[in-house]
Image (cartoon, rainbow, N blue to C red; front, side, top):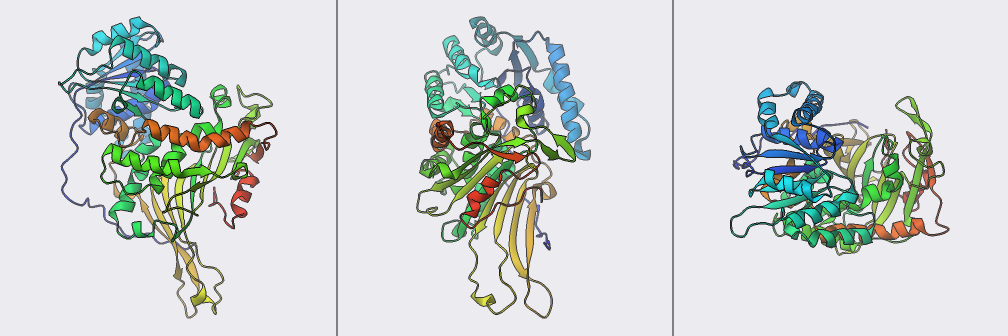
Length: 512
């Protein structure tokens, strides 16, 4: 396909003031010695420190059961940060020692059980009466117990009138089905107020995801086209090349459907399909997202494809089947791929199918939202050699690159009318060099300043599971359709292609 790159300006419109510093706060990380903390949370906090967004009164208390000292934990964080910074490229190839010195002096370790009252008594002494955020970077089975202990110890009680806050950040998975999600919400809300709970989805920290609203609602040429009169269908893809790695035991009880669809993909769908909120206030945005999710549904069992990867080739190397991975049952019925066709029954989207797919060991790592516009009438080109027009597709790329591509048709130079496909591309890395690096920076900062816009509310969580629950029930039903096999390194099972083919459509190719 012939390519063109749109010219753009990196000038930032307006003269808005720089972001304000977050207030002083003790940032408590349950699971502070774990992989998530080292790979993502500490690098994100380091980036916030480099950006000057943390107060002098900021500190970290890492809580875990391992036998560590402050010095050992700081050394582990330093090693992880060195690797992280080196991966960012030549613009930031070395760790800023001044920032690390500043941050490391504010890191301490507390050894203790997540379920013992003595841990929370010690934690209370370290926190005092100031602001605190509690990040639950732990297995989901501890969410309820930690929130209960926080409530019993008084650590999440906010003093009336003095503006002090106590907030809890909850990682996914938020439940494993609709009933368990409702029960976890009930348990958390028995201890905390909704405004204190920040249910995190790191996808919402991606710049392109946040930019969906900016693209739609700040540009007059997008929003008038964003409806069933102009859009044929929408494809949402979250493809991974990795397998289950060392998470076989966890994945066996989860699967692709539970792991990705009710949280990540439902949030992408809601951001794409929501109506314009009356403001960018957190509840105004989340109200509109909730309406979309409540209108979305999967029509029938034939609209869901579950697959599992078998041995194949990926990156020129042999890849084992899922059932041959460590800690996976040899007769496992856990899906590593799922594709779904959803309908959104409201005035804007009635009749426009939303196709979702996610899977492991696929041909390419790619997360994107592709808006397929309706074809223009063919009458003008009826007497030319052109038999088919280039489809008009707007693709919002979320990872590994972040940006927007617009595909359309243009005349090929020459004496005859021949159309060729061209693309206009906007890439964040080319125009804005100072963006966050992990996806967690924005989310952590927003929690510190009390902005819940990018976090999920209880009704959003339950509405997402409401969409997915029928597919879980169909998969568990006796006599349900068997798993569809697909080779590692492929684009997924052929049955997923058939899901679109029966509607006269096809997936955008992976690995092309």
